[in-house]
Length: 263
Length: 186
Ligand code: SF4
Ligand code: SF4
Image 1 (cartoon, chains in turn orange, cyan):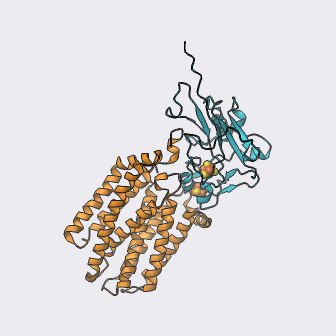
Image 2: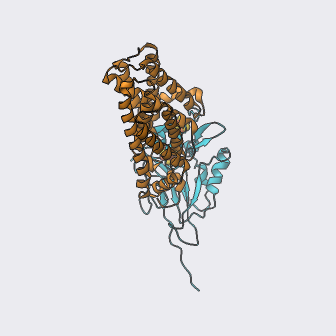
Image 3: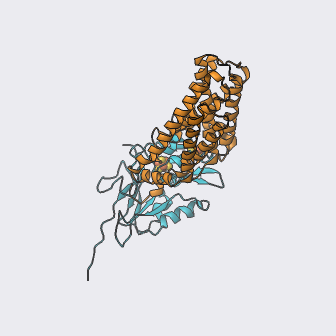
């Protein structure tokens, strides 16, 4: 989308990491107590979400008027995103205060649902008609895959030993899906209309894109060898997602870039 | 059909002089780099002649505007009486969502105000029965103001080559295509 949009990169990736951890929390609560620490996990969810929301304010020309962004829930996905993100962070803070080590099914279920609503509304916000390559379900898919990968990675910090293999399996599957989707999407764009084709070429020519792919491939190689998620691996994956998201914003081509040319 | 003001862009008459874009600039004094009306030359693959052809473009005052739909603060309104899409800069919080979403690149970011802005078809002038600054200034009659509800449908096209086809938005701008120039061989 022509510029790296650093505040949006921070908000989308950090919020997706937070939502992913909440999703994994729901999986763990559903699977029964595992000796992990749900309270500390909620603290991390709330912290990441607050950081992301603070980051997102830097994207606004008038940050103090941010609450006005709730005014158009009827059609604007951005208003819905603000609403759901606000509810999610509120729930995460509440859970960080009242949850015990084993977590609560109600809090985790509500967190997972609200988190998915944030991902859907973020995905729809970044799927406007002006970007034909992503004027579809792809942003939601990209964001969901990022959330699950980061979530499984960071949730391994708080899970007991009994749940580590499950989280490692989820982490590995999400990495494979992420790699496939990220490699296939630009290939498909190459056979699309002109602006889609330009987007495919821009992604393939982008060091941000290849750095993201390299981090995903390297993380996959590591987990293949170690079988459990090493403490440092989620940090590397977070770096890869930040770089990949910067590429998403910088390298996706706007229809107006080709005005006067064939579409 | 309800009244819908629109620009009719006659590419056969347009000589690419930029007077329309300059008239807009003179009238509104936008910040440097902020452009509401642009004159785009058609690519050679569309118009492969020594003579050039142009589209003078700005906001299309769409029937179902992407800008209006995505704006989280309802800074955009579509006027009932003439279909003009007006941006209220006072309400804008500068999130850039309309800029990202309009496929025609009409809303622009004003780095001084830190808010978006775009052509509102000189709606105050329309209310005073005056022409928009751009159509009034065009020296060849290539850019004119029409009401789609009253315009006789003849050779105008909605989606010429060189202009994004966005049926969901249903942009109101109409075009008359440039003719192939006469070749005189000596
Ligand atoms: S051209 Fe763009 S800014 Fe103008 S009404 Fe249509 S969507 Fe809105
Ligand atoms: S930049 Fe302003 S007008 Fe555009 S969507 Fe954001 S708040 Fe609305």
